Amino acid sequence: MIAADPQALPEAATPTTTTTSERHVPPSPEWLQAQWALAVERAIAWEESGHPLGAQSPQPFVLVVDEIQKVEQWSSLIKGLWDADRERGTPMHVVLLGSAPLLMQQGLSESLMGRYELVRMSQWSFAEMNEAFDMTLDQYIHFGGYPGSAPLIEDEARWRDYVRNAIVEPSIDRDVLAMTRVDRPALLRQLFELGCAYSGQLLSLDKASGMLGRGHTQTLADNLTRLSQAGLLSGLHKYAGQVVRQRASPPKFQVHDNALMTAMSSYGFDEARMDRSHWGRQVESIVGAHLLNTADADTKLFYWNERDKEVDYVVEHRGRLAAIEVKLAATTDTHSGLQEFCRRNPSAKPWLIGSEALPLGEFLQRPASFWTR
Image 1: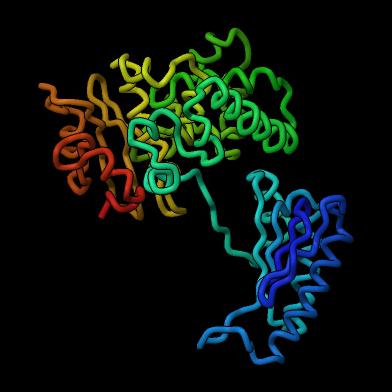
Image 2: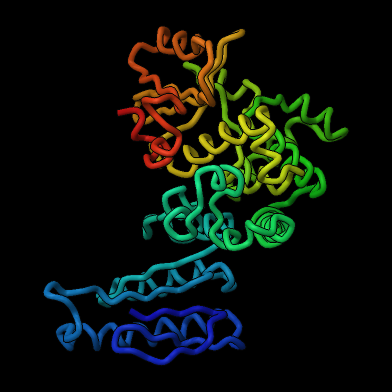
């Protein structure tokens, strides 16, 4: 394997891994071409050597390029290099890593159609944060799954500053404003803040427009789509039989990580747990974030309501349905919304998260599609 990072320091070469870049070398097309040529040379030598350092089964030679989106016109360049190597039969696999979703998606769709497999890496799960940082379930609900912020949770002011300035602002500036024309950047930021405050709740775009004091609903809808593509904030549609009816429903705002909800609020960890209403919204939001982050290409996430009945989340996977309701504590609620939805959709599987049968911690161990089986 040869790894090329445009911002990495040089490292000593090993038989299987070599870092070939220097910190002061700009991530130019020429730099990428040089790394690729070196990788091709070593891949051919690796193939001809009979894989002397490999395991019992032959191992592929892999070129890994980190932060590929920083290379100007990377997608068209990669396309040319890849196609040429396929014609020559170069024995090399290529892995491209990037931290800017929109920049990656644009390059993939414009130049590399039919040439790649997309593997999305979302925020860390509760199990991962617990194993790596000994994070408790309550801490995960409040602080979310950004591993870089985990060491700072004991100093909430510093943690909040990190999330806002090292995650939110770069994502908006690099993934949204740098990629698409946004006539009112301030309005997009205000929508993001409002969506974080209402995560797990319904809010019509007309009402959101009135709360923000300006902006057409279509502008807000476009901005919400951009924020969703950047992995920050989505608007879930109501589950209905017709797509038109789904689109016409008010969105249910949903952050992709609860760290965003917390960082944009004034609640500290202890204060949040003491405020039952706010903590309930955080719990519901962590359920939605988990479903969003674990949903594959065949899985869609909705909510459902009808008059005074509602279901927090509806998961659809290849025609199979799951109705998910979040329960915080023992109540006299009969969960009539769950019952009504399942009456209308007899094949749907009902789930009550927070009940003895399905504790929240157990729910967070499974991907979204699991609950439709």
